[in-house]
Amino acid sequence: MRVRSIWILLGVVLSTACANGPTAPSADELAVVISPTPLAVPVAGGKVVWNVSLRAVAGIGIRLDRDAMVVLDSAGVTAAQQNGFYSGCAACSADVRVEVSRSMTISGMSAAFLGAPRPGTFRYTMYYTDDLGHALSTTVTGPVM
Image 1 (cartoon, one colour):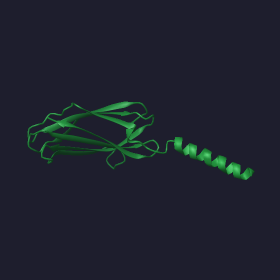
Image 2 (tube, helix red, strand yellow):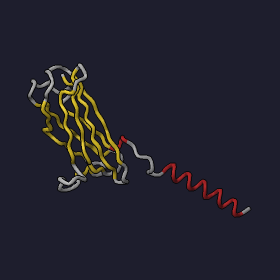
Image 3 (cartoon, helix red, strand yellow):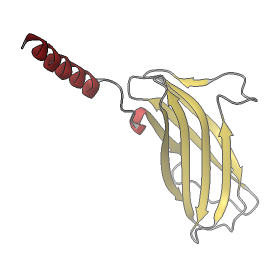
Image 4 (tube, helix red, strand yellow):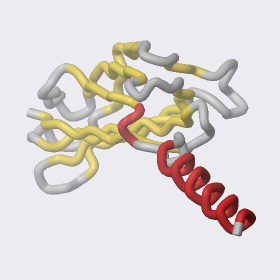
């Protein structure tokens, strides 16, 4: 009877620890804000320019891995696209991090605008790894007018 009680107690303790522990990653670990909003539609052949503000909001540090941006015009055609790498690549000199409860802004990001100058949608995704080793991403969208 005593052995059975110990196994039941151990099961309760382990299930409670797993339910309350940091085992389930959340894409809400990194807040991403794009400015200006809305982004201005450049002339064909010009550049779409934006700033990215990042904040580690979940009480855990973040390593920025890469990002991806696309502008789709009102017809759904890709008008601009950009991909960047921040950490973990051969050309990266060091990891780029956003520490716990800290923020950073990357200003003046740009991509050639190849589409017709008409309104559309801007989509930006930051891919990152938290300090627990979870690979996550956060995507934001906004208007291009």
